[in-house]
Amino acid sequence: MEKLKKILIITYYWPPAGGPGVQRWLKFAKYLPEFGYEPIIYTPENPSYPLVDETLVKEVPENLKIVKTNIWEPYQIAEKFSKSNKKFKGGQFDVGKNQSFISKLSIFIRGNFFIPDARKFWVKPSIQFLKKYLVENHIETIVTTGPPHSLHLIGLGLKKELPNLKWITDFRDPWTEISYYKHLKLTSGSDKKHRQLEKSVFENADLTLATSYTDTDNFRKNGANAFCVTNGFDKLESLGDSESESWSVGGLESWSVEESETLEFSNSKTLKTKFNLSYVGVLEQLRNPENLWKALTELSEKHPDFAKDFELKFVGRVDEKILNDIKNSVLRDNIRNLGYLPHNNSFNEMQNSDLLLITNFPNESSKGIIPGKLFEYLATGKKIISFGPKDADVEKILDKTNAGKHFDYANNVEIQNFIYSLYEDWKAGKSIQNSANINEFSRKELTRQLAELLTKLD
View: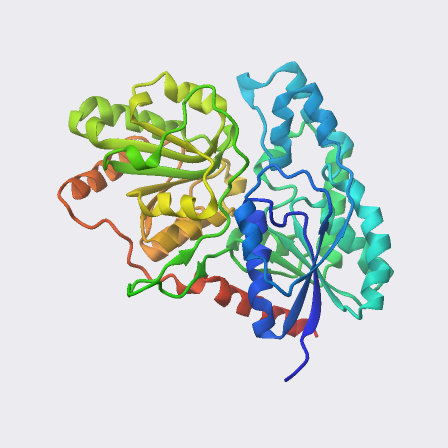
């Protein structure tokens, strides 16, 4: 049997961290040995994760080697100034009228003093440690995955120290093109430094991975040798006597439990069957589909039967300010707020839904973002309603798989028609399942694509 080739994966997010940033390389690590590669994980010993899901620890392959070193992060200091600063760890911000003076100051400091991000203090120690580790362990290929994009600077430093090293950068989200970049209150000098670092990463990496088609094109225009390997879902063997397949759904944006001041958590086992629209994950202000809430309000006011049968379910964390607005609308009595649920329970709630909600940032620069949750939703076979910019990559996938419909943030009547049409089918007992072939988005198939790209670098 041919010996597996070692590949070091440098990642900030690793179980027990929750969210799609964990799932991508957790699943690649699972399947890479089948394609000739032995993954080794390098991750912080003491990270400050914004989201936690202890159940993901069980998914780490038994024989996987994990190397850890200490990291220093300033988030504990930031959180003393304002509790809302905790959002920064997940790239979330108060915006517009919701920004206090402290919030504005914190954002300015984060954007201008921590370039590219607050994990920058792990860069130099990691370069020093890994330079020796790579040589001693005869590792010729590394991957850096971001955000946090500081990790790409680790790769950049190692590439300069070891020119023959094969370096793959993995951008789960863009750097300067990500939607919240414009909210960082950057000075012209800070903006220039971000862009110079990004350009240096693109030009020095042997291969750049993007998770969307649009990002791939944009990275190539900026000098990267870029290829698209999307996120996906993990297929498992069927359970028991059932002929249908079950799915391990990765990338749920879950977190440790926090009390909600506006909507009490519900018990999912004690409620009657409803026409169920579910959002699973983190919903922050920058991706708040206000036109959806308006459409649902108008539907409820126009159709008493819909108002009686409809249920809006949240599994995960929704920004308090969004919840406050919904609490003060006619939708309050239609809400089930389940809070954090373990990984498998979250998937069960997705399966027990009729329509699944996904949201993206509204600006055009975000049309290349394909949230990992999209593939998890596809795996359930449920219909999907999506919000984001026009001509988004998400829209292309939904059209290709006939899995749902995508709307921009200006739609209203079209949203009402789409939802009410599905509701009428549900009321009549008709199936509203999605039956498209989605095998190309399985984690194993995506790992095969990744391995082919790695082989070409040899």
